[in-house]
Image (cartoon, rainbow, N blue to C red):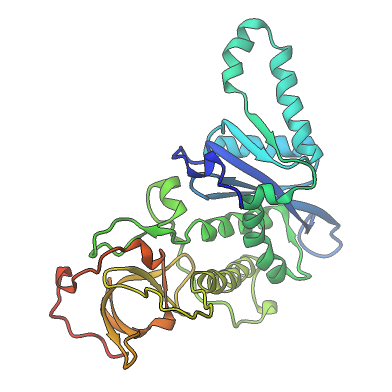
Length: 335
């Protein structure tokens, strides 16, 4: 495998260098009620190459004009990118030509001032989707479960745009790494920190997962699909963090002070239960399978198959002393 591109490993402003791709189609209705007509719409996904933050837009078709509208909405909310990576889709090439033609048709004064404001489109080679692995992975994260929770149900353009925005918040709430090496710091770094400076949150709402769809209003139906998406995607994300591969040599396991995510099926959307390893309990073979974990609500005891490390254990070169934790005299919760 080749090295990562320079924009992936160079610190930069959010969405300063971005990638874009389309996904779909999704069927929408022109109005509510019976007798409505179905039409296609698409998901336009922008991903930041530096922070992996996502931005989702709803596009009515795949024309250059519609993509330009999506690009303008994206720039109005996230700022103008200097470089935009994409494949060789005709709508992307058309948008690039339209911007270039506009700059060329302007007079010299305007051209000199606007040339630095142009967006540099960088196209992948033909038939090479692996050149855009970052935004292809974003399309998979958004589309895989979205198509399954929608099923044969059809929504209006406004309702689907609302669902896209809520899914965007869910994807941008995923924990990436610990914010600091302080063993008392229990907060992880998320893509939302780069966008709003803090963790993304959602409005509280009752659980609607087990309620029949026929008993829900259209607003409640959107909330139910958001909760279904959260449940499916959260389990998949935690499974990717907790890889179970066979090994023939001893490997370094979790260490005291390391940040982990706890598996909890009862958490609401956009909430992640994090903590740090407080104490490990090795078994007869010297391998720890149970640990006390320091969380914001105290110290609890969990089996290690219910926790997922945020970083590989090799990132923690030295073992932490549990005495550095505050409140070390607390008795672990027996649950």
